[in-house]
Length: 225
Image (spheres, rainbow, N blue to C red):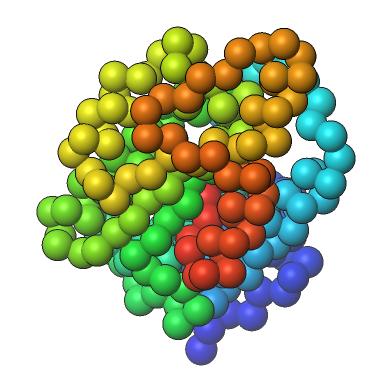
């Protein structure tokens, strides 16, 4: 019998407000229940709706890693949504996989970067490469889309990104890896007189939020780094 996880518990989990025992209980349930993973993802997306409803303030410097609960949730979502076994990535090891929810497309993952912090940029590329390599080795179809907005756009800016060579290599090796830049972020930078040139192959969406909502509606698994 599947454990019953209330919306209140799930909300507290996403906000990292549960104690250790409850957090582990919810995480275990998310990792084995694809429908619950999608509920958690939708809840996180709702929070993003609220945040994006207001103009983005200038990004403040931060040296903090993503909150443990959300990084754990991202891991569980990748297990439930992508159904890939044996992928080991930074800060986690996945030793088993569970069937994807019937509501999720197990071959599509959207990774969202909204922070210019160097560690997060490295993490999103590690995650993308880990998924792509695991899919190739297992013979599973997989599409990975990296969407960047706010400070995260620096990762996709020519002449600014410190990872331009690595991104070019990933694109050359994996035709199923795409880059999406937020058009609203680009426009705000240009209004401030900042020239924005994007890395080769980067597409521009009207906004990161529009792209994420569209992909979620298509059944993609969503992970914010």
